Amino acid sequence: MGDLWKTLCESIRDAIALSLLLQIPSLIGKWILGKEFSGFDACMLESPLGVNRYACFIIVASDFCLWFVLAGRIISRFLTDLNQLFIKKGGKRAGNP
Image (tube, rainbow, N blue to C red; front, side):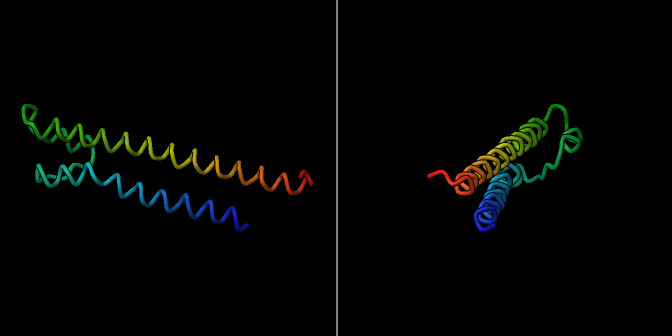
């Protein structure tokens, strides 16, 4: 259970660190534009001819893309580590040198 616990803790630590990274586009929008954009519905409240509307779409889309990429990275890393763990444990159990 030690190796599995270590793999799980590393994946959780990675998820926390990368979720902090996800806050960067929102912080940039808050600092530069002075507004917080939480979703596409917030973008529709902005003026159609204003820069804030298009900045909102870019910020929300980049948040979505980051979530998509980082979730895939976390899942693939966890599955790879889990696969290596089972291969390591399987090799010892089978008695292979």
